[in-house]
Amino acid sequence: MIELKPATQAIIVDEILPHAPETIWKALTSSRLIARWIMEPTGFAPVVGTRFTFKTTPAGAWDGTIHCQVLEVIPNERLSYSWKGGDDGNVGYGSRLDTVVTWTLYRQGDDTRVRLVHSGFELPRNEIALTNMGRGWKSILPRLGDVAGEDD
Image 1 (tube, rainbow, N blue to C red):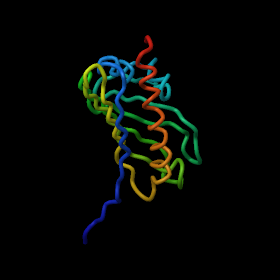
Image 2: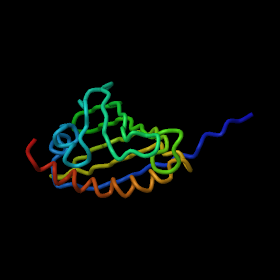
Image 3: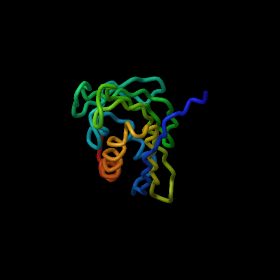
Image 4: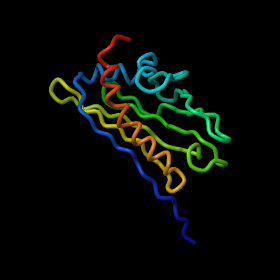
């Protein structure tokens, strides 16, 4: 018998921000700055294996905690972490989510092309998360650019 895996989808957002990769990197890896463009992380450090959390709106059996673990760190180039939350007992918002967020930075003259790939959304279970987070990431990238120019 062949076991079929659920179909997975990814959110991909690609933007050019008017900062050097080192400046964007600082905004991606400083807890104080991360809190200003997405949510406040608890326990974050840009070190492979580091576990950290974000807290968002709870739903049903899910307490709103997003559990993350740093998977890859290449300074000024790539940051990747797992993004897990939700609960098997929930349908729609708050359903179990087991995904990966990858930030890749490419220097383009004085600017940086930032490519975000948030992968592993299982359909149909994660369809609402895919839609909501797809919209969310599109608004978060410009905020990342705004915060990148600020002091830590």
